[in-house]
Image 1 (cartoon, one colour):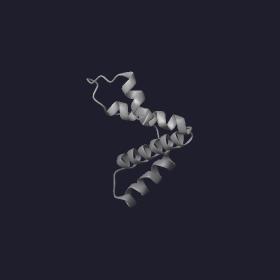
Image 2 (cartoon, rainbow, N blue to C red; image 1 turned 60 degrees about the vertical axis):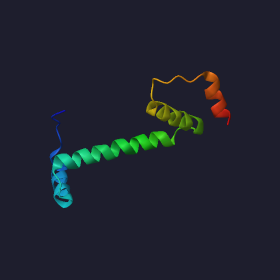
Image 3 (spheres, rainbow, N blue to C red; image 1 turned 120 degrees about the horizontal axis):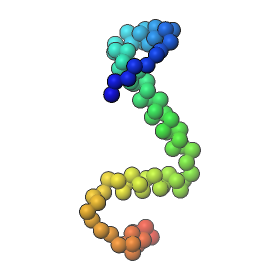
Amino acid sequence: MKKNIDIDERVLFKLKILSAFEDMSVKALMEKAVSFYVEHKEKEKFDRLSQEEKEDVGLLALMMETENDEYVSREEVMDFLDS
């Protein structure tokens, strides 16, 4: 996806300097910075979750990795959770 954004001249100058030090393009540096910021915010949000909410997120992640064509009864799930 290609988007045009306005960047302050001072910030753009600093981006150009940083990109020279990092030996990468300004675009790549901005993508790296945005990715880092998003990951930081996700971690921040995750850290604020209660233990129960963290377990729910973990269970959801595991459920998303499973194959959807298998059927497991409620009893089997409860037995597994009790063990």
